[in-house]
Length: 318
Ligand code: PEP
Ligand code: MG
Image (cartoon, rainbow, N blue to C red; front, side, top):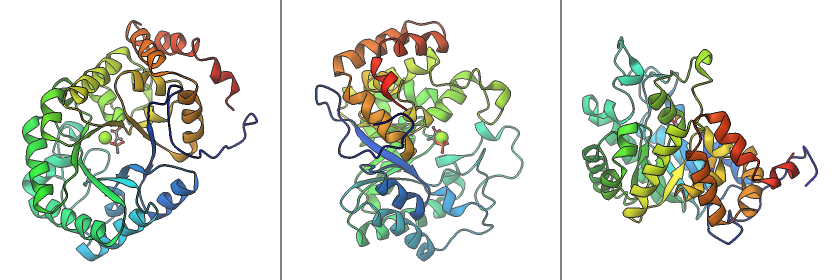
């Protein structure tokens, strides 16, 4: 494609030697989902359902939720759609589930942790997801945010099974879950790494504070090491592993993530074409070499520069 031109990604993500890497989209509503399908996304790797709830003082009814979820599922008939349960708290407070004044909301009752105090909210959400899934043909996967332990994964998966939702997984965005991935993934059907929060918690750097942007990058070799630990834990259990944080949209980082054991990437649709192009030009073996190389570097800049210099395809991208 010509420089700077917006190319549509068409088809399936693969490395140069044919290893499948699903290229999916992050969406928040039906409009996003339709745009993602239009851009050629293979499915949805992260449906942020809390966005349907934001700005509301009371919980949406089950019927309202079913309608909102169906709109997203309808954009991807027969395709995979990963629906994340309510990720309320910290940067996304919701008056009906999150505590009012927490001393440290990012470390507080957020994500799946809100379900202990408000189990009925998660129960109604899973009811709505199951109803939406039954009414549409999309292949619905469900995942919970902010999992830290294998016990949390186990109870979430059991609850999903009670709702007839058989493919239940977890987000890996807490360092403890990354380090314990072999045990967490033994309890879950799949995982998706949220590099935004994983970076925040690894670097102890609030993702909302722009002064800390220097620290807040998934190119931190220590963050990549946690991605690698998660990749090993997923492989040990034979589980699919996605990345759905902003890092998945970085075409330079994509082969590194694949080399660390990631099997799908979910991103803003406009990044799909460049990520697909870099993967198509890189073999799985090269991905593993790039991952090894990145992990050897002391700083994010050094890691990025080292990988960049070995990806001549980047010169062809707009
Ligand atoms: C993440 O933490 O990387 C993620 C994908 O979730 P969110 O950005 O919605 O917290
Ligand atoms: Mg997150």
